[in-house]
Structures are given as structure tokens and as C-alpha cells.
Image 1 (cartoon, rainbow, N blue to C red):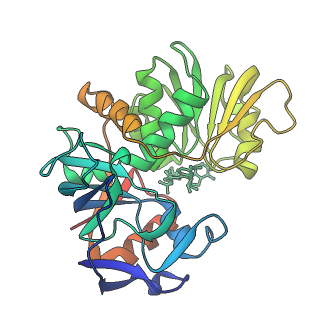
Image 2: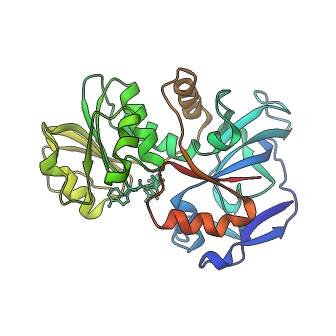
Image 3: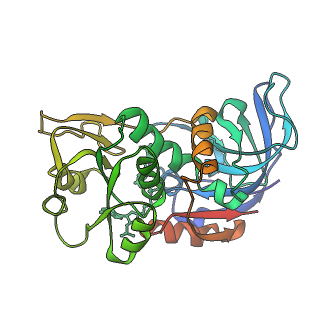
Length: 309
Ligand SMILES: NC(=O)c1ccc[n+]([C@@H]2O[C@H](COP(=O)([O-])OP(=O)(O)OC[C@H]3O[C@@H](n4cnc5c(N)ncnc54)[C@H](OP(=O)(O)O)[C@@H]3O)[C@@H](O)[C@H]2O)c1
């Protein structure tokens, strides 16, 4: 099969087209014919070797954890998916080797869900990692309730734009942070207020304070936004394991996104209800993956970038 892989950690010039053996299909696995592969910041972090301490890598490493495609083969122990099913998945496995930047990917069936009928393959490939992250942070970790005020950092990005819509669908009032060029976009997702994070601290601009802060970057951005949270509020972070910091009046939680078909089914239900749409800023052919990484690394993509096969 044709794939984009790296033979060692490094820059974008390590991304090479290769002909590799088709992946094997274990008893609990399904083989997916990839129609589109979503790109996430973790892909370039992984390419650079920043996750070497956390995962075993087997080179050549095919990058990519997000996929939408069609089931081509099922392992003998798989009962709930069949050849021909249109599916999507966040396919993070224990070993980093056979990713989704390829014509075929083999994934544990438990990570795979039926694709929302109303989304194209390209749109669906933008959902899994970012959507599961937003769901697990806002619904499972922070337990956002109807009527609460929620501040979503980086509200125009891959995770953020889905997070805004998930919080709105839970009945929350959402404040998003974004650069001015994205303010109308963030409002179009259902946010009632937008603050400009490029024009000084956001804390003073959020009034009244929020019940829940969703932090994506940690560091100074988190330290600043924490000031926007009311006493007794919650902070959930993707970057800082102690997101409440020195505020002992806050409840903090850290999320590292988990794969799973059930979470995807929850996202599918939101899509089906018309409560969740995905913004694809640009789709690239597989062989232009380096250009796509370059664009994502600049840090200002609106919504998602996706590779099309
Ligand atoms: N822990 C986990 O499991 C997990 C899961 C998913 C993602 N993450 C991490 O979460 C981060 C965001 O992921 P993503 O997929 O949403 O990335 P992304 O799509 O590349 O995010 C782009 C957005 O970030 C905004 N942004 C850039 N710098 C900012 C800052 N200092 N403050 C506020 N917003 C800023 C940009 O806003 P403007 O264009 O409006 O300027 C842009 O809309 C990444 O670091 C990623 O690795 C972690």
C-alpha cells in the first residue's frame, strides 16, 4: 500500500511516500480503506520525536491517528462491524507504527464507529481526536451543566471549534478566545462572547466570571485565563496536570484523550441532531502532507486540516 512514513524523527523533510506491506488484521481488528486522514498537532510532535518517551515506535512509522473510510476486512472476533461499513476512528494504538496516512489502516474494532451519515469522509476525518478530546474534557471531566458559563481557549481551532458547539449543546453559555479574524466564526458556532487573546490578558475581559475553563495550552495562557474562573469553579486542561495551580478554590482536571467507539457515537448523535458541524479549513492530497504540517505548525488553522486519498 501507498503511505507517508518517516524513517527517523525529524523535520517535515522526513515525510516520505513509501510502498509498505498491507497491515495485518488481528482477530479484534478491522481493516479500513482510508478515504481521509485528519491531521492533529500531535502528528508533528510525534514526527519530531517528542513522544518517544511515551510510546514504542517501529520505523518506518506511518503517522496519523484520525481516519474516515470504508471497512475492507474484519477479524474473526469482530461482530458489530462488517465489510462495506462507512466508519471513522481515533486510532491511537499502543505501538506507533501503522497510522492513518496510508491507503489502509488496521484498527481495534473498539476504536471504530459508524461515520455520521451527514458528514463527508473529509469532514468526518476531522472529528475523532479533537471531538473526543472536547467531549471527554467538557462532558466527562468538567461535567458542564445547563446554564453554566464556559470559557473555551483557542475556540477557532481543531479542538476549540468542536468544544464550543459541545458546550452549547449541553446548554452552556460559551465565551471563546480567538484572534479578531476568527471572532465571527466563533460566534457562528454558538458562542455568545468572544475575547481577543492577542490583545493582553483575557481574565479582565470576562465578566461575569465563568464556571468552567477549558485550557488547551497550559503555561501563560492558562495562568491568565484562570483569573476568569469564579471561586468554586472547574479548570480542565490538555496541557497542565495541575491546572488549578495555586488556586485552592478551584477543581482541576487533566485530560489525555482516550480512543473509543462509544465516545464517537455520542459525537455522531450531536452531528445527527444538527448540533455539531466540522470546519475543514483545507484538504490536501496525501503527497502534500508536508505543506499541511507546515500550515498546522503555524498554529492558526480555523477548524481542521485533512488529507484526502
Ligand atoms: N491532551 C490531549 O489529549 C490533547 C488532545 C488534543 C489536542 N491537544 C493539544 O491541544 C492543543 C490544541 O490542539 P488543536 O488541535 O485545537 O490545535 P490547532 O487546531 O492547531 O489550534 C489552532 C488554534 O489555536 C489558537 N491559538 C494559538 N495560540 C493561542 C494562544 N496562545 N491562546 C489561545 N489560542 C491560541 C489559534 O487561534 P487564532 O487562529 O484565532 O489565533 C487557532 O485557532 C495542541 O497543543 C494539541 O497538541 C492535547
